[in-house]
Image (cartoon, rainbow over all chains, first blue to last red; front, side, top):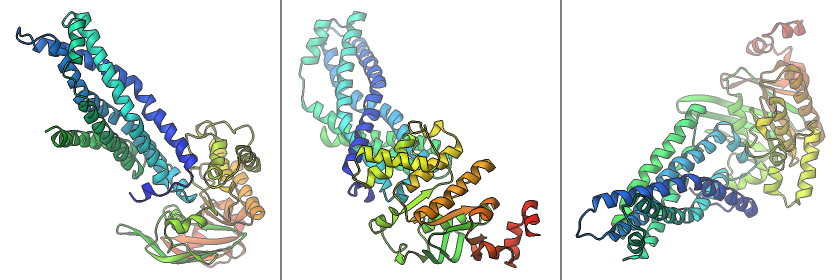
Length: 233
Length: 248
């Protein structure tokens, strides 16, 4: 852990690495994030409308439920679980392959702090890009709900728009960002750890990749509960 | 000169190196020979600090490397060039970027200076028109040559090569051997080569250390090897019919 935060050999090289990781972690994940968010929002809206068939409950409540579910839980947690699978396995397999093909040894021989050079830019990039990805996911999720509600005729546009504006708490966004940052740190650091300390060959690289996804997903679920308890309860 | 003094290394309960002492002479090609699984690579990795020794010490021109921490080792590590068994080229970088990598990290050279240096190193290993290719797009022999080019890009004082001929055809093996010999003379490096290739032994071996069962069994010059009188060494060196004919 100490070597991870040692002074970089050359800031310009680390800066380039961070930029590269921003593209890989953030831009590379946009497709799956967008697709998941739109359909997640659509399903939440239709299911909420299905469950709230009560003359005492106004239709715009569906918008409130969809908005809060997406902002508080679905975007920061489910999307980060998906990223744990996509980004986590990619980080672990990249570092694992570098380990078993002696590329990490080659870095060490040159006098480069390999753990810092390989993992710090990933962690920094994850922390920088994740809030933007999650904001985008929230927007697309709510948009997906609107489209689905309108197309299916379950929630008219006017009701949905009224719902997503009603009783809005800006703190929910802050809470979601806190969760996203914690989860981003978990995904990048846990995956990098498993990849960096891979021993063996191709089989072990696969095992490290699986472990990275399993452990980071488990940690996300545990920390989701802890953070919710600490901040919202 | 690199001095290895009484080093031992175990992995769990398995002792891989047992009290090995040897010297790698300056300006010479020093070979570590022995059968597979006898501890050659572990000895080399202990010498360059990739593995920490359990006991003993390693000195690079009098500097006690084994007792240094990561920061203290940095200046010595920048004097080391290493060619790994599989090349260990960075997959995500082109051939040119691989050779430029140490220059990017440790020099203040401009991009054009770094490109010129990389080009010179690639030409030195007889590689042309591969600069923009990725390691996955070149042959095994080319990978070894790029690895050598990367290793010499910083004008190393010490050059380590771990099984540089493994997986190569005889002609390419000879080419790699000649490169190692020429670079050693040109850069006046202390070169250490791990090998079980008998052609390397006869062509470039100047100072030889024979490892067997994790222990040093013999050390001397190539000219002495024919009359070593060491049964284990004879058994290893003269295992092939070609070498038996050479002996007689």
